Image (cartoon, rainbow, N blue to C red; front, top):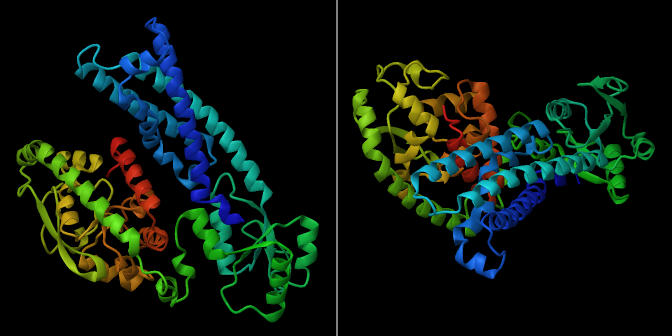
Length: 464
């Protein structure tokens, strides 16, 4: 099926291959290390010279690569190369810091250096193989879109933005005679439901995407059912759109979408909710330790710039629209309280101080929010919390905006790692699509992925 080319089904073999490459690199580095030091590559070498932490290097490498597991980068060698180079640079930086800080002979410097070099090379080789496999697999899915209206057009636009294509789009089917033999975003309208069977056989179609939002006429319905009975796969436009973009198409949803989507499955419930809370408490505990360590340095920097008080407090709306007080390190100069235009932080905002810019780059300004997590007002992963003034504006202009309050707001989230800050209504709508996708598809693995990619964002100084 088409959806088999997205999400978990792409990440799983990719991660497995990366881990296998890193594991091979681990043992090759151990072997070369033993040869350089003229040691027997035997059980005694592993017992006496190799510390337990050394075997965790493949996992650390996967963490550094986590940003490359984005579906949009799955089949792009340029993005893959950039991701591996960034991971390599961070690994080398960490290695050099440790190299100069610890006493000589206190860690296997040669072994670690060799591992970094070999694992980067093997990862690139595996990724080249994976990209070829990805492209070959995507071309095997020959797809027809049923419906050349607004939904079909929007889906084609998203498909055209992806490179390589997630599948081989052959054309469209529509019963409107005015659309026959025309092109929608460069894709031909090949026929209607009466000719769909012959088109399917002639062009070797394997999948259909249903992109009709209104009620199907009996002829089209019977043709689709016949195709399914013949073994062809049918995917809805919404599922295909979500699989390609990692977003929910809010402009194409019916008004009762929220009720239908969450009638049988409430967000943040059951075992997932328990695990998520335990994970939040564990990470918040670590965050408190980190806060205690960096607080004196950050407080000094804020005092030098005259940014007082040290902890910035502001009312935000949480789950169910319940207000709470959020805690952050201040990063902006004070402005007039009646300056409503200053509610949204813009890129290169002149109010951001020099030290505040550093805090934003490293995301350290968010660290006091671990207090909100401990209090149960926030989670580590969830939609970004907003002020009530902005919520009132956006919910009047953006469909389904208030739906994001079905779950606790988060320090990081699916929308944050994909888009970052939103300055306009259009950007807010796009960000909401990511938030709704997270609410609809949240899993333990998805939360862990978001957290790992946030770590990569922090290490890469991608904050703003």
